[in-house]
Length: 313
Image 1 (cartoon, one colour):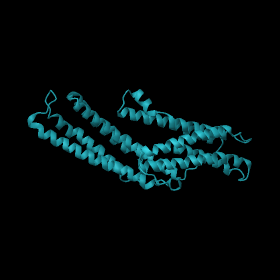
Image 2 (cartoon, one colour):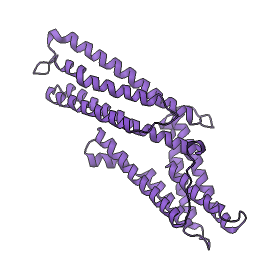
Image 3 (cartoon, one colour):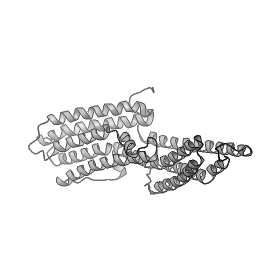
Image 4 (cartoon, one colour):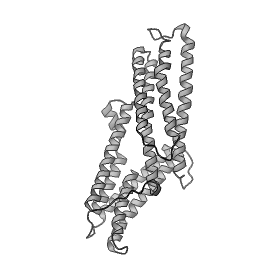
């Protein structure tokens, strides 16, 4: 959502700069600018809470932000269009409408229903794709408005980006990395589930799926454009993906060789099974923790702390 408010402000401020600062046109535009500016501040506050205090307490800020967007929608509807409005009011309403749609839509439930899978990577990927599709549609509509009104949206690069733009860029980067690591993590969970069911045939199949997932994830990571703020998260993600590949190629086959056809552990292979379990648990736990800490550190270094002191619940 941050990019939409930033883009909306760019459009409105560009039009403002083309008029006299004391003109009624600018005063009219400022009514919209001030509302979008407040939403931007609330978005930064939400991001601060999420990075430094966790997602549960940040959810309160997200709900407050959506409530404010609802109020702004009502306010915009009551503003009488200026004589030289040129679609500003209509466009501002459209932006708020789509912000509310993105914020209130239960993409997870829709993805689960479509994928027919409650906890799998397919659902995660579908959810991401649906959000990206709706977000892209909003961006296109804003760009079309700029084109129709002959407005140039300047891109001065990272050195001149807003704080909100920087937060959005970092979070988008982390989301791309998450898709890679989640693919192998879900594939690994499927192996564990098959072993718990003592379904060795299914476990063998899922081990092959993990190998494929690790290759997919490595390819996904290679396609990500690195950001200047990060030299650690991407490295830890690569380590995690590479270990899951090792698990698929070596560790899980060893583990499966310790079972008989009935799914029971062969007596003289108990040590092999236990040692493999220990290696899997130790390495996955350690590498995953380093990866999660690297993500958190990246966010906390570049996203300001909440201005108000709030205790964790």
